[in-house]
Length: 288
Length: 271
Image 1 (cartoon, rainbow over the protein chains, first blue to last red):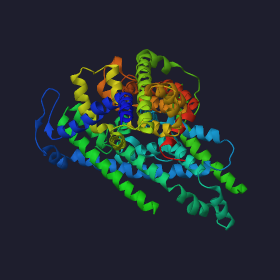
Image 2: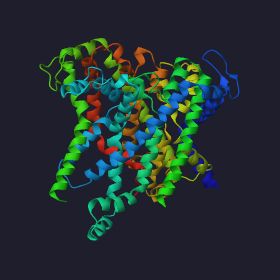
Image 3: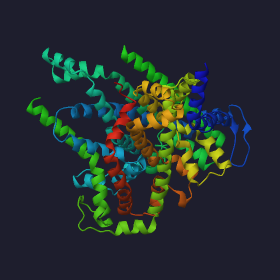
């Protein structure tokens, strides 16, 4: 017992920075945020309790509805692309090929670059007079509004996000593919299964937990969409690319409506918890 | 693997690799072009002459050096503190029995899914009350320790045999001495991985630094770039700014690739 107390003392001493940080920068603000979401508060006004008013206002808010819809739309397609495409590339990269280092470096360039920079890059490429439109005209196709059109802007943001994350998730899949037992693959091949059958019946089932992991972190990341529309479209045109976090930023830090902004933060938190639970269920379902 | 298959694989990979690399290539060549070349009717993929005008303007109009300095201070400081504190906490979870251990570890795991945005407004209010706006401390504090880092280091320390600690204690070492003199030096690969990871996520952060330190003198690279189009009016200048900012990072990244890969995969793939 004396030993355990001695160890506890040492442990708490070592954990002190972590605990202080956790209490003051993680736990307290979390609860403070929940409280603020039930108030009306500003930079120079003390929070005034308003009950669930912020949430009933949110439910009527057309901007919020647009942000919610756009974020789910973005997340659905981005997560689909980020789960499937890197797996395809990793399966190909896992073969004994020459020049793997060169390919891997190419896929890593977007991973090494920040979201701000890739967003600026794609804005330049897809601007009205940018190289993509010049190329389209040059091969005889009609020029496109791209970021000036809601639907196209959203799809450019989706494509860019998949493009940026491809190398990241590829690396995860590659590590998983290394651990697929080679004798299973060989046995299936000997039984006359073609390479696609082997992939479908042997490789994919044995890396299921990793596919589920990628699905989970891609979902969490996508629901927090902010930098891409902030840089590329500022949420426009006509709210077509407005995301939940962009609206949170606008309400909280442009309009300084801390209560209303915190209500948006609470909704985001609840959504992420629900999606994590859903993903876990899905993971269990897939595993059995 | 048949010859046809092999060819198909190379085609697929080359296609994706070109797609991944083309924007970077275009930023470099585009930064040397003038507006006439960029907007011409035939796509130009090589500058008629290397024109450094855009670079001159960027360096004259945008305080790039100051942005770099701010980012280096913030990311460097964050990395040093985060790695030390996360290692210490991770070590405790992996090797010490202490009162409340399960409770704290459950909290670490729970906070893994709480998004930073869910507490960004209260943090702003608190930091404003403490006059931390436009200070390095204000930018750094939220990112100093992450649940991810603590979790990663505890996983890492679990692979170090517990007998080392017992032997050292028998030899009269203190608990703190065991951590600092034996376990931390043994954790070099884990420390390197977490360092690269922390540095990159701190370097790439936009939302928080933009909110807490909007003052032009305190802008980090990302914040400065987010507002670059206020000063860089033409696409060649934007591209020049992108090139200047990206090149050192990409070089550093490629050198530290091994640790980055280890960091990405540490959460996903267990032996």
